[in-house]
Amino acid sequence: MSKAYLVLSNGDVFEGTAIGASHDSIGELVFTTGVVGYPETLTDPCYAGQIVMQTFPLIGNYGIIEEDLSLKPALSGYVVSEICSTPSNFRCDYPLEKYLEDNGICGICGVDTRQITRIIREQGVMNAMICSEVPSDLTAVKEYKIENAVAAVSSGEVENYPCDGETKYNVALIDYGDKKDFIKCLNERGCNVVSYPYDTPAQDILAADPDGILLSNGPGDPADNKFCIEQISKLMGKKPIFGISLGHQLAALAMGGKTYKLGYGHRGANQPVTDLSGNRTYISVQNHGYAVQPDSLVGVARQTFINANDGTCAGLEYTMLKCFTVQFIPEACSDGRDSEGLFSKFIDMMGGEKGA
Image (tube, rainbow, N blue to C red; front, side, top):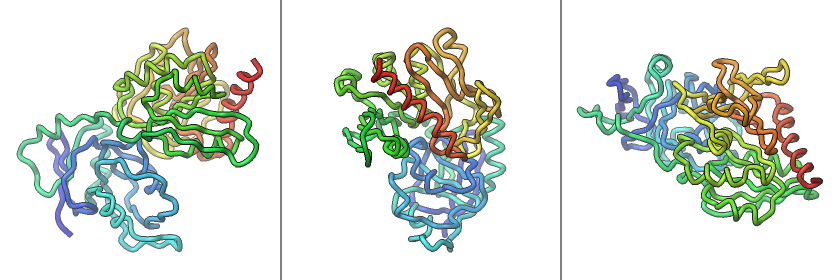
């Protein structure tokens, strides 16, 4: 195995061992705190343009199970402390490193991920490069910017996902980088789902006359998606709307709100969110680097959830517009009943729409 280097835009250099594809890569370096679920991390469209570092020290223990993979990876690179070359799982098809090689993902192992995480937590998210030789000029690393992230991961065509049993509602899902998990949740609740590409005009969606609209999660800076924001503003108040993660941020921008970049984002399966309507706190899955500024929506929306770690906005409700949004991934909460409440709320809103 050959040497590799992780070079941060602040000049810090970490020497390790190359894994995966044999090429250099630049991206925004972020960390995720998930203990398990590395296949889900590797295939999450929200990591488009980013080098992902796992804080859990040993990755690859159960290898890769092809049957469980539904999407191609979008991340730019992969950083782990130690990679397991001899996975142990009766469903395992092959080791993680082969997956990285086959999908053109360059990576590095054998670096101190705890130290690197501390740097990001103290200095904020920064760009980095995985390379075979340390460059003398870091201009390309420092100037790197994630661009057209949603366009890179959104489906390019309209796709239909019928429910198995009796059809109760028809839902239009706008795909900004959806992992398809939301579709299953809706199908199970009697909803036919039609997934539309991110750049579908609002009039096309309204012409199909869905009972409700789901704004999916996705990658990148929400403010970059000006066309999407404009279309959502045309959809607001026309149909019941449920926004998730990036969809939550885009809906806020469509209503005149503001978003801002977090110091190091929320990425992992252990993000606590507190329901402001009661006294419950849920452990949620999140993957985002931006947040909504709730003060920018006073009189327009009320805050429904906050992140219990840092108090950032984790949910909003636009009561006069039949729209609510959350920053976390509801179907991936540690308690499945948490997600049922949100999807059931969306179902109830569509029922109200039909009866109006």
